[in-house]
Length: 437
Image (cartoon, rainbow, N blue to C red; front, side, top):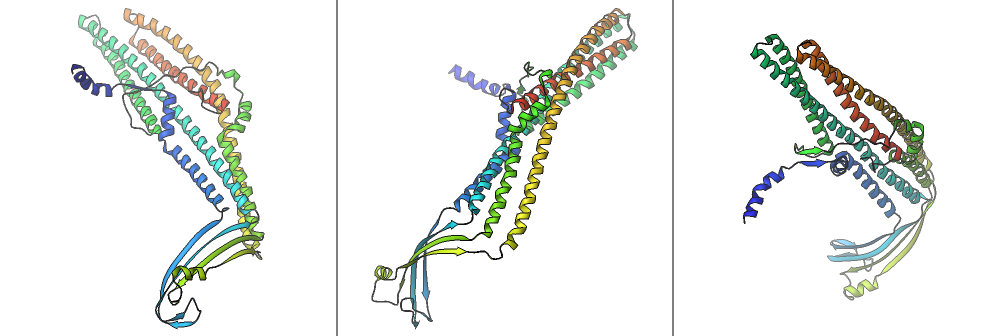
């Protein structure tokens, strides 16, 4: 009983426990909740349904009909075909089917077109998820970068607070003037402002990431750090080679190519309207009329049964006047699809070229920034030692500290930009996200 009471008391605390999310976890949430990706999924489902609808036209249409009528006044007796003037009831029942025998390949080409459009929609759904994943990854890295900048700002504030406390003691002891304390407090106030700005940037980055995943923001969620990708070296990246491989496998390219191919079959299906077509139909029918008193219902149905089999030939005479504008429009749409494919290839090539350039630039920037932090850190240590000994001015101290803080911010941003570019280039290299996260 005591254990149960203890567990019950701890439940609210357990509910507030921190949850860690990695980049792969965030991508899973994106695929589950992102509405833009869901829209791509619905488009793929619509294309699949449209294909099934096209295929259904190939199958025969089987039907059963029945009707019941009450006739009064002057009318024709359905059983004798004589004119009568009386109230009588009439009931008929029939069954039959219709099916296309030959339509010049119209349905076959529509089916091929629908298949390509369905495959294009499926590829486009993957392309949409990839595009959203890149934006998610950028947001994830931005959260980590702003968090690191906030931690650096916290360290600067803590360092300034120590200096304020130290100088305050010196002023109280009469070994330092109030002007020095005021300057130290001014530096502390500046660091506090930078801390507040860094906190705001961090919260904004977290909110943007939660919104990208379309989940409720939670302050208890922590995001796992990213490790460098040693296998992705700047010197090993070749933009032309990466583009050649990516253009053969990336879903956005395949989607655009399949969409372009579909218009060829659209043109063929329109041209088929100019070709004679054959349709087969059959029907079996029977009826009952209350004017015949000699036969009961079922005997009368048996006596009136009849049917037919019909093979219809349709020869279009002036159909080209109707189909020619449709063919012209379809050919223009095919050229538009080709232009879309060219634009997609261009965007992919430029994205890869930019990613390769950025990877090399970020690698150099990251190395230079780390060296700058190291040298400025050593210089600040010397200035701080002199300032504590009273042989350096407050101006030299604040200037050296500001330079170090700026260099640390640049180094942090360069580090996470480099981590982002490494993963982005790995994605372009292999064409999927497996192992990227």
